[in-house]
Length: 325
Image (cartoon, rainbow, N blue to C red; front, side, top):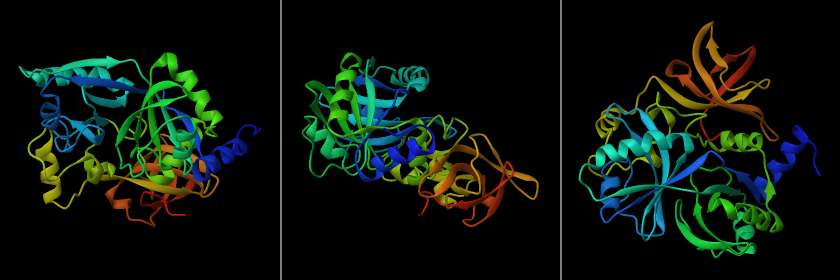
């Protein structure tokens, strides 16, 4: 068995890149939206096109305020009887009251579901899921999902576009989560740490709400507009800001970039050029393939790929996400 530190990360990294890996997403929660007008209601609030999705399909979407600030990034899964909104747990107390506010007289209801969220990563992830008992669609697109069984326990499995390493999420009832984990490990999925998951996210350019994105950010700053926004849908909260930025070529004062570093740094480290602050690291790690790396919001004056920046005494080279090998 691998030990700790770099050896452990290398072992876990290899599993996620070349085999199957299992991660705990303990900071994720699910809000179920029910009622006959649930899809129409959410379509008018969220940034992406939910109305065109049939049961078994879904989208990634943003909830913004009227000034375009990001209040949450979420996965919206259309099921037969509900729309399931997966988001960071600490966003529930922001999202639910806001949806209640916008509901007015619409016949929709909101229920916080007790769910444990797991991630299955790697090229052999689907094989591990099938070996553990799940039936998966052969041609699943991002956010397609299915009710299934793992280790004899009922779960919902979704192709997860916000995860690195071709990931899937598994929603399980908390009392069943242990059995589901055991079944996946028995099927060959190697448990991975948060440090390994961070390295994979940086390499693949998968920022998350919380560690990387906050309510201070606009969607254009994250580089996720194409994934979380539909240019063809009608009005939604924050649309005017998105449209205005699109008309101006998407130009914003800062943008999320990748960094190749001379030495490891930590989240929160400051980027500078000639003594002038130009950004802040959001997530950092040491990749077995690329060495020390990070994601950071970088001022547009220093965001050109190849720009050299100082990061807490070491040199960083700015690059686009995902980071090239």
